[in-house]
Image 1 (cartoon, rainbow, N blue to C red):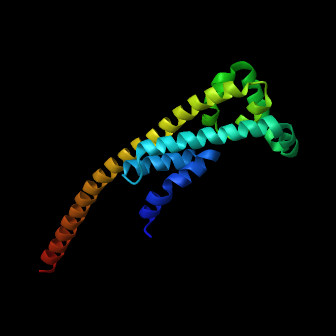
Image 2: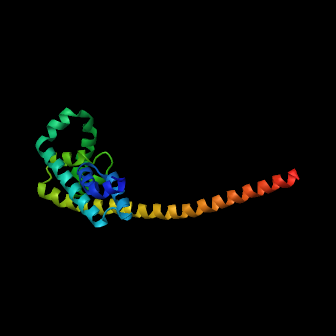
Length: 183
């Protein structure tokens, strides 16, 4: 089976699974694949939205139920958790919407928010808004990047032809020069 057939057949499933966890790279690549016609852009956005929302909801409820035990077990997460706690106290809605965009906080952020006094209803609303922005933004960036790659490759093909023509002209001139010198 060709790689593009695999992408068309299993791409949405892989994207969903990846978006439950982190998924930025997969979502960017899915946007590029949508530009290439291998996936549907609207379906990519929908799958990323659902996967991203579901993943953060699960992490929120894990934090609500097991957060203290998890932080006690993995002490290296205490520093990022402390940053998230400080942000929760000041800007909980903005943090919930934006936590998926913060490097190093994507997984621990919803867990720590679940450990806080933020209500489940508030988290759901803000999480849905954040997931929608994230799904459209990252997949859209991938789609535009695919367009830029296509444009660059089209120009690259032109430059390759020009360079090949130039090399052939130089080789022909050198051969002619050599022929004239030998005579």
